Length: 480
Ligand code: GLU
Image (cartoon, rainbow, N blue to C red; front, side):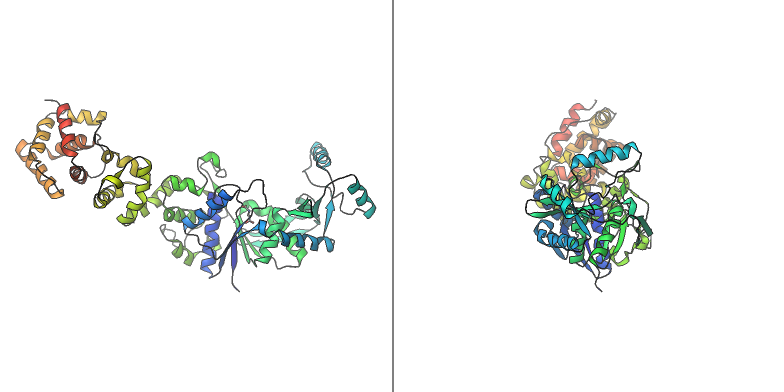
């Protein structure tokens, strides 16, 4: 049997980290088992669904490398099928038209609350006589289609993550609405119903989704049974939690994949980190892997039941591993857009070779692509501003004459070897400590006391003719 799984996002927002992580687990499971990964867009909520969100979902999945085998299928293009399925349940007497008004439902809710009962529909229109139904229709009431739920049923399944699960029919809130009326009759299917019809039609063998869907699973199993269909396996994956142990939400700053992209994470780093959110490889010391290699090892036995805490430091670390090992050419292509957005025009004013040298210089020190903006700022302008530490450094004894010695020795374009020669010469001629000279060069050339390798930085500044100007400005500021 070919395993078939799906990701079924609703386009009511950008691709959410939780949905993306569910997509990762589906993808890994499909690839591990040589199965199929299907993409379905659940856009039946026409008021909240938007095509730009669909675009964001497709782009996000592609960016993460979660390629799908079939789809995208759109629920709004499948309405006829849902209508027929609703009719099928009506014909079998397993569903019925309910004419209860929203005011009546509200009154019911209020009275249940007063009695300290959980809100539920009281199935009052389950067995309407044709006369009574005609009467309600004549009042001009609209209707919904409800599916009969047997309160005495115990619904059981063996969850691939959570083991034996059981749910009481009486805890499902009474007969459930599966479709709303539209002008032409049966109308608009609701989530739980459309999902089951689709999962049956698409021959989904394993439903892998977040644990917030557990109660839906109980309802959906009853629907499979009503259709006489085979119930798929279910796997409810743990939620992603914030530092306080609550479900990660918009309040935590970022939730969509495009936010992570803007924050400078690489798709490989982010998807690697998401894989670790709830799953661990058999060799738990192994933390850096591609999706393909994770797929070889992925099973639900190694997925945790407990919620997975989102750990920014770990994500940064995983991401840094990808940045540090990336080919300079590729990293350069990734960094240029961040620099352009910051207003640095390297790609218009500098040779590619120079830009790649800059990338190689800063590569070991950054964990996110966005950090390249700050680190490269000293190369982006002609001028230099000395911060307080750099100014302090320039006030130290011997600094002025040492820097003057450097300027005197600087007659043409230099490479790293020439720069090191000049440093050696000045140390000897001026009898200054090498450390003092290096720190002073850093202060003079970058205006700061921290940053990437100073010799390589100097060479890059020299190539653009900026080093001499900066040294002279520093000398003017240095104490005699
Ligand atoms: N549209 C649902 C969601 O975005 C899908 C849930 C499911 O996988 O069944 O949460």
